[in-house]
Amino acid sequence: MSRGTFELISSHGDHEQVVYCHNKEVGLKAIIAIHNTTLGPALGGTRMWNYRNEEEALIDVLRLSKGMTYKASAAGLNLGGGKAVIIGDPKTQKTEGLFRAFGRFVNSLNGRYITAEDVGTTVREMEYIFMETAWVTGIPKAFGGSGDPSPYTAHGVLMGIKATVKEKFGSDSLKGVRIAVQGLGNVGFHLVEYLAKEQALITVADIDPEKVKTVTTRFGCAAVSADDIAYVDCDVFAPCAMGAVINDHSIQKIKAKAVCGGANNQLAEARHGDMLRELGILYAPDYVTNAGGLMNVFVELEGYSPDRALDKTVQVYDNLMRVFAIAKRDSVGTHTAADRLAEERIQTIGKLQQSHAGLSHRPFSTLKEIKNR
Ligand code: NAD
Image (cartoon, rainbow, N blue to C red; front, side, top):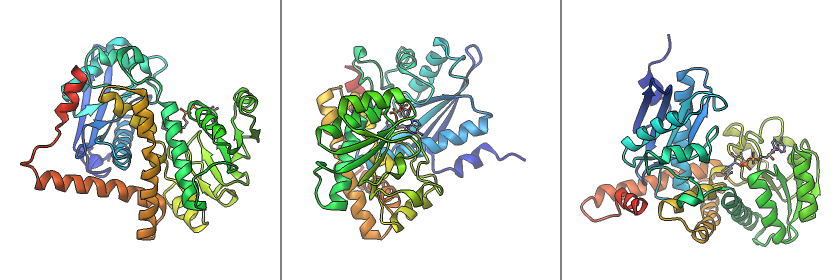
């Protein structure tokens, strides 16, 4: 017998609210999950995916929304965690009506959930959602939005690499530091550009030979095959392509002294974080390192400024230093320490809200007022 919806929800975390959105006319079937709003409104993208069934979609949105709570908290942002999924084929089933109907559901939550792009959605669909609600980020620059987050993500990763190198080798200068970058897409390309300015010794790889050619020609770095990049003898391995790159197959062959990159879900399983620790390889947890894109979107909520967004991504450095300190304090892997950093912040601010409920504080509505200006 299949499990009940409430049972599924409670077995995937302490979510505050799960909203099913349905419109027969336009064929909308969507789920919005709000995991935690202790720190602020729940922000997270809308994923459109051809889920095999509704249970798979529900589990995905529960998992992803919880991840956003941790990411925003560890980033030091006044945001909670949320996510939305639309069940459907993004190649064939996207219509204006579908996204405008979805936008109305987002609007009905009155700012408790703020959406953005994710897998299967683009700036175009954000424009449709924006026609129905102000509670959407990642809209085009022409509408006062922040546009492509990748350069900001990359700048945050650069700061993350500096913090990691400082922790591992005692100095955060990247001059002469050997860095292997896997993936030269939106994040990887900008990262290599920043690393070249820092005079790092860069080795790159991508499955797309054109991208390798462009980057090696432009920045004068070395290249290896996509199969070899994770095993280059170097100081820092920077995964900027797909997830689960640290797994049972790869882990014993990694020669890097530290891992710090922009890719999501780099550890195939949490135990691989413990294994990296045992091997003496310093791991910069992915969701702390790649939070620059989220910081960029947060700045959009306050009235966008590219300079302020870039400044904000510098905080990745201090956030990672905190993670490394907690890992030492508690004798745990850095992936566990990152979760503790996120949880401790939510607990502290949550208690503050309870004990000082009568004192004035900056309410969510301030964000709304700013957005409506
Ligand atoms: P992208 O699709 O632009 O780039 C990915 C690159 O990796 C492509 O060039 C692709 O050819 C390459 N690639 C794929 N498989 C590879 C392999 N086996 N070996 C080497 N290269 C391979 O994606 P992106 O926006 O640059 O994102 C990269 C990673 O960072 C993803 O995991 C993404 O989830 C994560 N991330 C991105 C952002 C952002 O702002 N774009 C923010 C947070 C996290």
